[in-house]
Image (tube, rainbow, N blue to C red; front, top):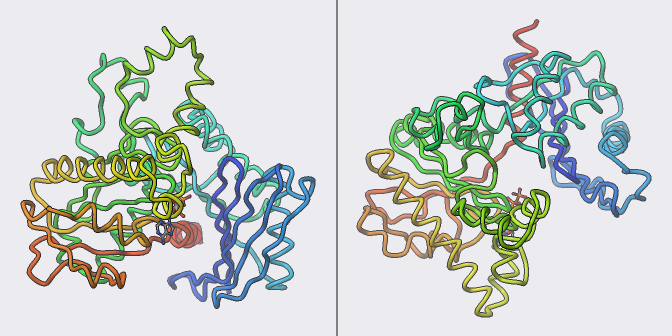
Length: 396
Ligand code: ADP
C-alpha cells in the first residue's frame, strides 16, 4: 500500500489530498481532502474524509499557520491523527506555470525547481507560492518522489496562431506567449469524456471552467486547440476579482494619466476587478444571484456575454461544435448561468432542457439538440495523484 499526498498552494491557501494506491497500476483513491485558507491572517482548516466525515473545521492561530511550511505541518498532523501509519511515498504539486517546455508532469529535482523559479516573472502572484509549497514538502519528505503538474502543460500543443501575440518575434522567443491555464481541470474533463461519451471526446468540445478563476478551452480529440486565457491568468473571461480580456490601451492610460505603477495596476486587475469590481458588492456568484440589484445583474450580464462571445470564437477555431461542458463552482452549480449562456444558441445547434438543467443532470441539452451540453464536476486533485502514481511507476 502506498500513500500519495497532493498539494495545491495558492497565495494564502494550501489545498491537500491524501490518496491511497493499492497497487502500482491502480486508480489512486481519495482518503482525505482539505484546505487551509487565510494562511498568516486568521487561518482556517477544513478537511473531510472520502466518506464525508468532517475531520477538521477550525480556526488556527496565525502562528500555527504563519506560512506554507507551518500550514504543511498542520496538514501532516491531521493526516497522522486521521490515518496513523500513512506512508507518503509521493507528493504531487499543482504548479501554475511550466513555461514553454513542460508539456507533461515532471519529477522535481533541485535543477527543475531552479528552472521553475526562473519562471516566477511569468506568474508572479502564483508561482512563488506554488514553489513555497514544494520547498516545504521537500523538507518534510526528503525521501518521497515529488512531481510537478502544470496548469499550462495541457495547452502546450496549440497551433502557433493560438500560441502567439501580434508582437515582434523576439518577445515570443523570450516566452511572451499564450500559455493557457486550468490545464489540470481540462485534462480531467477530457478523461471523463472518454469514459462517459467517447464519441464526444473524439469530436469538437468546448469546456467552460467557471469558478473564482474562469476560462474556456476548445479541444479536438481531447487535445487543447485554443484557450481563453493567454500569457497570464488575467485574460479571457471576467472572474471573481480578475478583469478578463482588456484592451492594453487601458493599462497605458492607467500608467500615463492615472499615475499608477505596476504593483497598483496588478492589484487593480487581479484583486479589485471582475465580478467584485463591476458589482461593487461581491466576487461570489451566489451572492450576486441573490442580490438582484442592477450592478449585480450587470456584472452577471457581462460574465455571460463574454462566455457567449468566447463560445462563438472557440467554435470557429474548432471548425464547429459537438459539445459544451460546464465545470467549476459556477459551472457545476449555477442553473441561472448555464441557462443564460445557452439561451438563443439554436443557431449553433444547441438547445437546453430546462428541467435537466434545474436538476443538474450530466446531460442538460434536449434529445434533439445537435450540440450536447453537459455538466461534469471537475477534479484536479485526482489528476495530480495519477501523475504522482505514474512517476512512482516510472522510477520503479
Ligand atoms: P476556485 O476557482 O476558487 O476553485 P470554485 O470552483 O470553488 O472556485 O467556484 C467558486 C464560485 O462558484 C463562487 O463564485 C461561488 O459563488 C460559485 N458557486 C458555488 N455554488 C454556487 C451555486 N449554487 N450557484 C451559483 N454559484 C455558485
